[in-house]
Length: 631
Image (cartoon, rainbow, N blue to C red; front, side):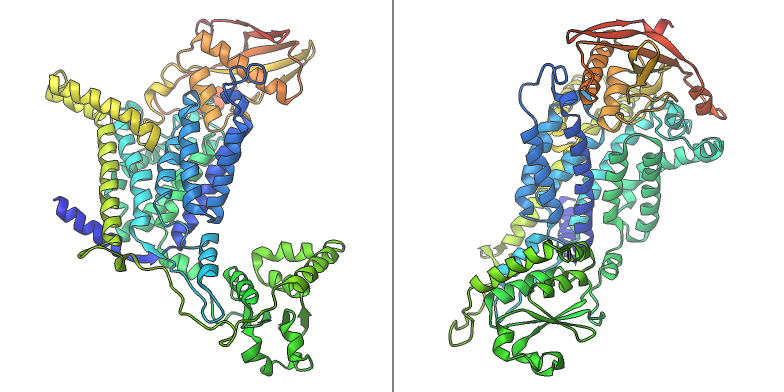
């Protein structure tokens, strides 16, 4: 069986397809990760300080976040991508591993995808690394065009490890959940004030639609592992998957979770779509003709750089030596003068020289148009022109001809299949084998983690083997392995929105600042209407909603949470904690056991009740919180 799997794996590894979709995934997923990291950066004192801005944490976190943000930006632009991916992975593990009370499900997708980024050829397309390769191997005789194809396996690995196993482990929880088995898995979380960001009453009130969507989500997660790799089913799977995550984006305050998984679904977009979408039409309308000295090394490097960004092919690059005789607009200019500067001609026959040529070139590339407009501004234009003149005067003027430079055939990067390690063993064989066994290990780790999921535990109970010594030992080993895989590989359990999250959760807690007897200001934790405020997104939402608060309230954790959130908010809003009073408000909610018409709207109309107050005196926190369960 292993040999058969290995053979199929090699077929997939050897299949070369366009890398454009993989690059789009790299950019989209990294932008979403950047958004998450910027949020963590903003809340760093809430997360890492012992008491925000009053008692600092063990280390300053801003240098860590600075390097993390830079590494993500390098990945987005595809510059030194592998090195940046390693730095990103290390910092992801370090930061996420230290903020367990803020953890939420998306954190572990960042870890496993970040780990895969180290090994996947994510910079083969739409990257500055590709430009660096062009510059390294191009010369006056040869323009190097690195391959833009990747192994088909590069598309499947993130879908397998970052999505399908997440879903499969999730259903091993949901099949033991009355909430999901009764079809309420989507309706109930969307109808609880503590968890819903935006209400679509018309949708929630269509009983059979929302229950049907709940069963659809359950069936979709169950089947995804077995069908996502089937080519004919990819489009409907893509539509359903993205549709469900758009629903998450609309309803719940976990936008980066919804967008992150949607980014992974980009790998299911047919490769041909990206090829057509980004097709560089050879017959595209030329907006400008760029003339350059074909024997000038600096000119060649300039053309390589500009042509790399010439995505719409609106710029035509022509050597003076072979094409100037056919250009009527330049016939009056001496050839030597043409060699001393950069000339271009637009579609109307107008000639541009030097700095003005670059303005027109930038204008011909759609995403550089703002730069073209900026360079025309008075002041900027004159500074740019002087700077260009300085470079032009001081540049190396030696030209490369057969006589002056000679020509040696360029030594291009060897193909993995050509590098032999042994007589019948190439570098390609090593890479494919390492990848096969590496993915196999990750698959085994996920199986070990899922071994201790509720569905499999229940199955062992029914069989009657739960209390045997072998099972007990295997469960303990699985738990220890799972603790390692969770931290370093993001392979963990995914019990999301289960009964335990909502059973007995009959309260919403808000905090209000009282600057005077007659005024108040709601902290952006919960808004006056009872829905999450501007602070409660992603990990900050899970912290307040399920760690500070929750179905069963720990009074000490609640007090510490209110202390930290009020201290953080006070600093951000220039509130002096030498003396400040905050009121604690609670809204009593009903916990539904079945679908009810207009349920959410009814809960949002419940009044806020007094639940005590919290006072800061001389930067010391004094809580006076009522026992909420008895209200």
